[in-house]
Image (cartoon, rainbow, N blue to C red; front, side, top):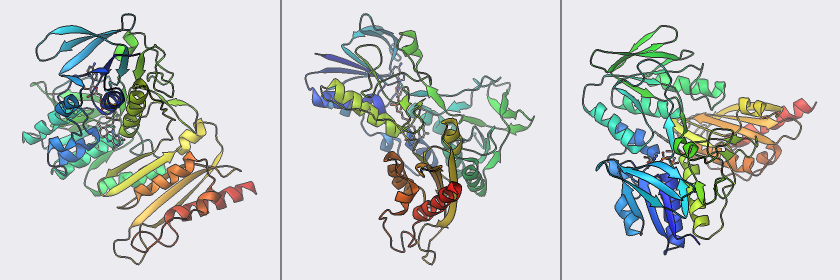
Length: 456
Ligand SMILES: Cc1cc2nc3c(=O)[nH]c(=O)nc-3n(C[C@H](O)[C@H](O)[C@H](O)COP(=O)(O)OP(=O)(O)OC[C@H]3O[C@@H](n4cnc5c(N)ncnc54)[C@H](O)[C@@H]3O)c2cc1C
């Protein structure tokens, strides 16, 4: 039986795994390495701390190193794991403050190193003033820059949801903000028609959107700082600060070097219990790949909601219990300025790539009864399989009260329901919350009509 657990990475996945394992097996020695300055923090909250909506950095921390230590976990802060020897069951570490190095032996290892922001291979990308945002320390560095008072113009490269959330935060601080994205609509995980609604919402907040134009390079001043983003079409976008919002990739360098197998998607290959293919080595969070329950493909989906669950599953199994992570269906939600957007299941492009034949339906309705004060427009889109009418995907965009409706649809997709069955659901109704026909039900009705028309 395992007596010593080593965890690499002390945030969502690593922190959850360490806590669960220790809770179930108090006799287990647990050592958790974290190269940053915080443990168990909410990276998801960084944009709201940068904007000032969340006042204190400390509010983003769910569990400090001291709290982990009080629970019996030996936390090594500012200590980076620099190598793994799976034959010897050992990790090699470096203390980033003291400069010392050492080796720690394990019976079980949890690899939970998260992901790293994508950096396009263009000139100037490593200049001062170019920031990726992934861990809390990145957020601290970015906020320090903004607090310095020398930043007036921000260019965000990439219009993914993290890029747009940071763009909004900078706009709330009164800065001039431009977002540049290669695609015709931002947040490429949404279908273009929903993306167009998001683009409109972003522009309404006085954020300049440069679309269908990628980054060609960063112009760097004589002081070594970025001073403009140059686009592929030759536009020069002046910038005192550049933020990368091009998405992330799994942080798997150490795993690859140690011979821990990766999957087809580039994330670490794990089974449902979060075991890698190397005995005694587990992995969880942004660095692993998951099974998509609809496309049956292996996918890397870097979301905190999965990282916490996967870390918990690994910890329960290491602690002698039994738990599984059953896969993902692509549910995600974001707020961009005053607009909320959410999705679940497959987008049109994903459904096509997975080989489904489908019909779509989209409806515009209101978040409350149309006559009720504060009612605002909500658009619900559904993607249903031809003939069977099985709900394959849904996207929602609108003002306050719109996006969380996607959760009901996520449950429908998880349970493989048809749009006919969705239409019969006993959903709640009162004028302050919904029209008598909830937008979800109206969309299901439209989708059913589309399925029936297609059947002929
Ligand atoms: C701005 C922003 C907004 C987000 N918003 C949302 C949201 O609204 N909803 C959502 O579900 N998700 C959101 N996410 C994604 C979510 O934060 C991540 O999916 C989640 O943090 C992943 O957890 P993790 O433990 O796998 O990795 P991480 O949180 O990246 O943690 C990995 C940790 O490992 C440490 N580490 C890495 N390598 C080593 C090493 N060699 N030695 C020691 N330590 C190491 C790192 O310092 C880091 O602290 C957001 C992310 C960002 C950046």
